[in-house]
Amino acid sequence: MKRNARARWEGGLKDGAGTLFTESGVLKDQQYSFRTRFEDGKGTNPEELIGAAHAGCYAMALSLILGEAGFTADYIDAEAVVELQEVDGAPTITSVALNVVAKVPEADDEAFLNAAEAAKKDCPVSRLLNAKISLDARLAG
Image (cartoon, one colour):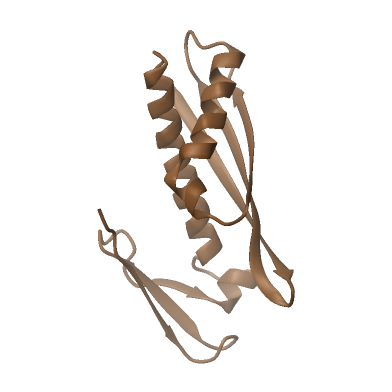
C-alpha cells in the first residue's frame, strides 16, 4: 500500500511559502512557511504533521494490541510532541514524546502498560522515525 502527499514551495526560505496536498484531499492547498514552522505564522508545518501522523498511528496500534489481549478501549487520547532542535548545525527532529490517556474497562495497569509499550514499538510511524521516542501512558480514572 502506498499513500501520496505533495508539497510545493515558492520563494526563499524566510520570505517564501508552500502548500501541501494529500491524495485523499484532506490537505489541499494547506499553507506552510518559515513562519509556521519557526514562529507564529498561520498554517501548519512538517513537525506538526509528523506528530499528527504518529499520534493517529499509535492510537490505532494500541487499539489493535488491546483487542488482541481481549480489551476494547472506550477511548484512547494520544498526543505526539515532536521536538526540533539544531544538531551539528542542521535542524533535526530529536525526539517524539507520546502522551497517552485511555479508558479501558477491565484492563489493569500492567496489562495496559504492556500494550502501550508494544504499540510504541510496533506502530509503523514509530518504526519509521530515526528519533528517540518516549512514551507517557496512563489509564483514565
